Image 1 (cartoon, rainbow, N blue to C red):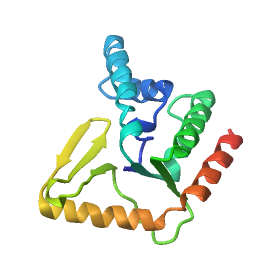
Image 2: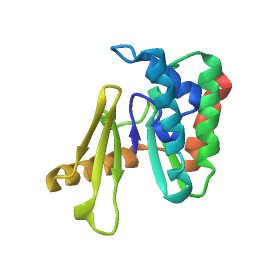
Image 3: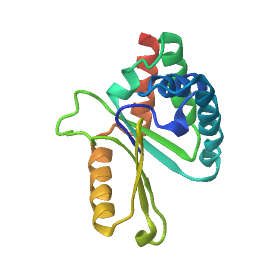
Image 4: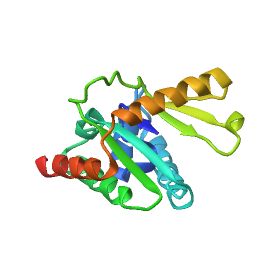
Length: 167
C-alpha cells in the first residue's frame, strides 16, 4: 500500500478515521460517519491474517486531520502496528532524491497467480479497482519505485517516532 494523502485505513485510529470521514465534501451527516468508522476498525482484522506492507510519504505523517492529540496517537499507532511481524511500514522523507510521488493511495493485492492480482486506488471520494494486465504491470512498477525510495523499516520507525516527539 502507498499512502499519499492520508494514513491508510488499516492503520488508522478511530479518531483519525472519524476526522477523515467528517472532512469529506459533501459532508456526511453525523449518522453516516460512525458506521464508516466502525467498518474501518473491523477491517483491521486483516492485519492479523495477512502480511501487509505500507509506504508512507512524509506529508501523510505530518498532516493533522484533527488536532495534535489525534496526530500523536495516530503516529504512535503506526509505530505499534509496524512492530507486528506481519506489518512492514516504510517512509519516504521529503528530502529523498528522485521521488516523483504516487499520485494517490494505492493498495496492491497480489498472490501466487499474478493474473488475479488487484489494485485498489483509494481516495476520499471513492475507490477504483484495477485488474487489467497492463494496469497491474504499471502499478507493480510504480510500487517498486516508491519502495526503492523509502527508508528501511527500522529507520522508518525511528523517523515516525521523531515526528511524534515533535508534536
